[in-house]
Amino acid sequence: ESLDKGLEKSKTSFFNKLSKAVVGKSRVDDEVLDELEEVLVTSDVGVETTLKVISRIEERVSRDKYVGTEELDRILREEIAGLLAETHTGNATEFELPDSKKPYVIMVVGVNGVGKTTTIGKMAYQFEKQGKKVVLGAADTFRAAAIDQLQIWADRVGVPLIKQKMGSDPASVAYDSLSAAVAQDADVVLIDTAGRLHNKVNLMNELSKIKRVMQKVLPDAPHEVLLVLDGSTGQNAFEQARQFTKATEVTSLAVTKLDGTAKGGVVIGISDQFRIPVKYIGVGEGIEDLQVFNKFEFVDSFFS
Ligand code: GDP
Image (cartoon, rainbow, N blue to C red; front, side, top):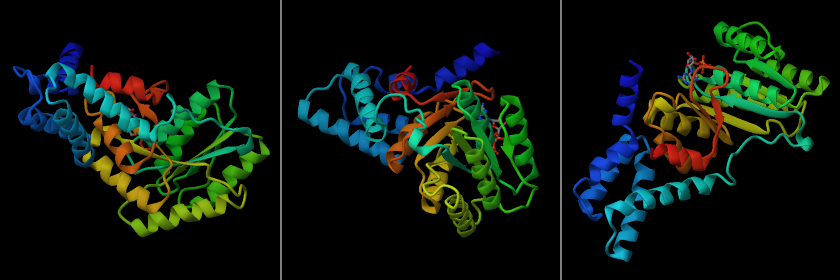
């Protein structure tokens, strides 16, 4: 069964689709470019970024006159790495937690079901393993399950969770969380928030109120607004990025559920289109299944 799964994934991988597009062709012509465009779009790179990549390759083809299909792989890697480099400085892009910003406040946003709670749990685990002192804040007070789930993760990792009862004011929970973090001399605070997209004005108001109230404790909080997106949902992830970037200033991304999908193209398209670096990718449900995003490894994995 696992072999079947592996095969299924490889059949739909970017690299396989690309190979099919160029089979029997010796040079990159309009037909190859059309196929390539389709491969990129169906890999969830997004139309805008796809057209950008295609036009860059067209430029190279018209400049160099003859571009063989065997070079296409290398050129594509270069172009995609180039796109990622525009939003990702350095290599791995771990949060640094500078002493001047202690506790480092990361407000985590995203719609329900994308893996927000899980990602917070995994991040807490990683920080804890690095010897950092972590405090969690359950400011998604809209659903009882959200608070319960976060409590399970807090217990698993062994970090304190600041919470109130369901329905209480999220900003008040955030205020308590920051106060507790300051009192406990914590290094990092992760604040969970509710992501109800159906009411955009509410979302915007709620997030700005949480920010405003946190700033009563720490004037420069939050230091990061991390948007969690489900990488297996393709165009939905783009739409959520659009909505959240309108509602608040998003500074970084976590893209989840990239295991079991060959559609990692979302990572390329979203970071390019919204000019926001990806900090983490989720590759499973387990506590260890969160990777600090590495653009070089990502480009390699996209092509293999
Ligand atoms: P939330 O509603 O956004 O807080 O979502 P949860 O954190 O509760 O996650 C929803 C579901 O997605 C759970 O079953 C998680 O185990 C699962 N999940 C989260 N991240 C990943 C991931 O990277 N890969 C996989 N396969 N599942 C994930």
